[in-house]
Image (cartoon, rainbow, N blue to C red; front, side, top):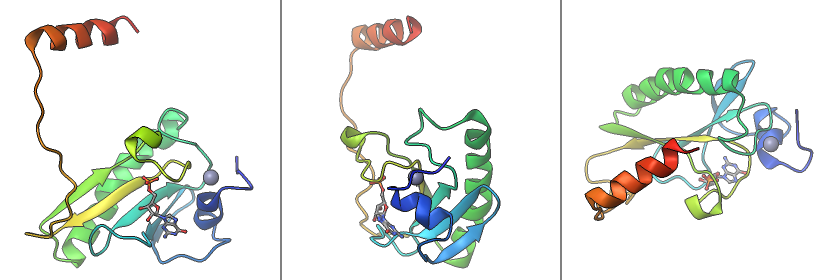
Length: 137
Ligand code: 5GP
Ligand code: ZN
């Protein structure tokens, strides 16, 4: 399924040109126009799924296999020191384009991309409460 108003549907299906690092029947990997680091890419399914929760299992299973293969090629080719996989769902999580995509972000020593979080605090009681809430779903 396609969404006529979705920019990533148009990019993934080649209606809008993009710098494509990889393409197959189901996915396209493009360079991000506002990269966090050099080589920041997006793995985008050709079918429209709004986010992780809408993504079909069959596509979901393929996502990590593609990310492994392409991420590994990118890391070698760009001589990166590491790679972050990031995937945002919902505005609160930083999602701005509502067509599922996985960020592949090459990391370089001292790149100061500022992607990692500061560890917060928790308590054993709250961890138990979280477990209880998730188990009850
Ligand atoms: P999100 O915030 O939804 O996880 O990520 C959206 C990403 O898409 C951002 O990193 C943004 O720079 C990128 N982006 C938005 N529009 C375009 C576009 O038209 N072309 C490309 N290549 N990237 C885009
Ligand atoms: Zn779409």
